[in-house]
Image (cartoon, rainbow, N blue to C red):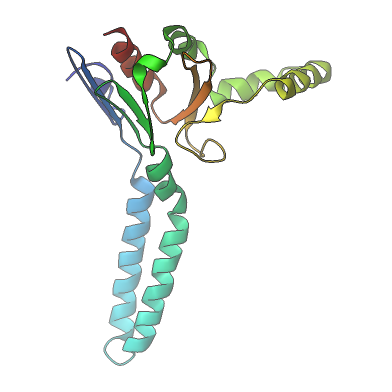
Length: 191
């Protein structure tokens, strides 16, 4: 193991010959916390309600499960649409797969220099009204990049990179570990 997997960011990579492997692990703390809270809540309700009021306990159980599903909708959708893997020369984001060779090396190198979301917001805050109006006009003229893997926008808590394919299509990739993903893509592209 080497590369970004040693950074402790939850990403694992391995490089030997043509087989660059990278799997981005999504955070699980929120799902674990809500499951633990549900388990404690249901144990307390079981002590209070069972065995006399088992019907009420099942109603409380069903309602609690519904709440856990609502509270975990975003992490579940991140698992479906934003799971990232680089394996056997292919980049998979959610349910979409493309060959890594279709990404331009120049756009991958430029992605390293792209500001993070926090840096971009800070730079917007320092601009004048005229500069913001000009940015709005130019951004309306440009075609926005397609979000790889699907979805309406980048989920909360994730960073984004924009890369281009050899055909000229701009792709936006939502990621938790920007540097590790770019390292894996550059290594896979150069081999």
